[in-house]
Image: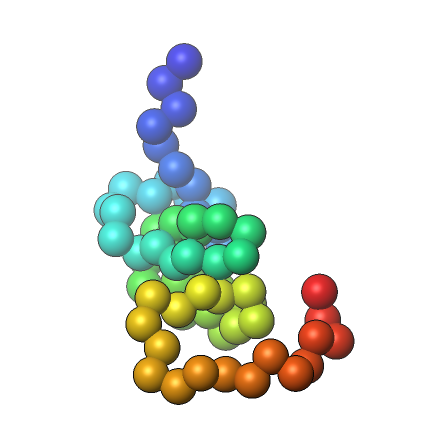
Length: 65
Ligand SMILES: [Zn+2]
């Protein structure tokens, strides 16, 4: 089985260009383009694990899970 092709975690299209990826609490996400990546970031801000954070965010609000 050749399962090398990833699909965009936002729109479901085949990811032909690697590089548009994000690390989240649920794992590694791949996207087909910068646009999908940006939208996913906006929709899942609380899920993202930033590679390098300049400011440490407060972990007081745990209303969402
Ligand atoms: Zn996409």
